[in-house]
Length: 133
Image 1: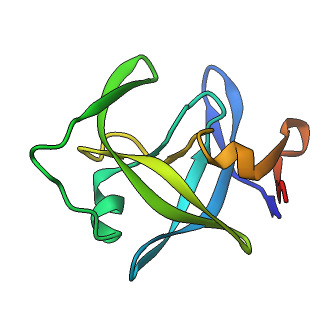
Image 2: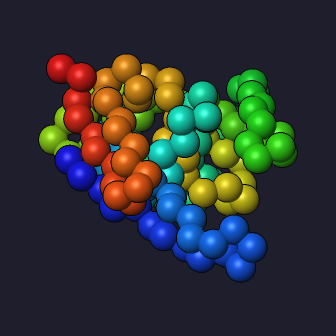
Image 3: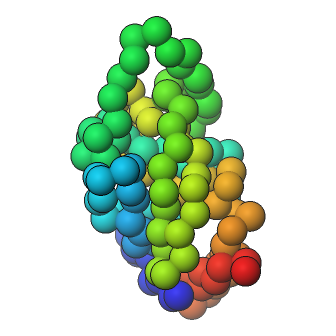
């Protein structure tokens, strides 16, 4: 599968390419399409609050809250498991469901990078994604 991502222009840095994939997330009967920024520096896939709510995720006030750094800031999340589909390949993936909408959806390495190969073609502004099996 080939994805073009997004190109933005920054006045100081010039053209910046962001590798996004179009995916589908599923939690039981809840299914939602989404666009995830592929971040090879992120350990766990992070879903903003609104995306988790669309997947029917619920908060349990007694459950532990984990934290991770994103862009130098500490973000808090609840660990969940959802089905993640890219193209025709679907996997179970652990995700961090964020407690707010301050961060966009990020595709991290845990579970995902074992199931898919990511070929970042920066000069072509293209991301090639293929299942490992």
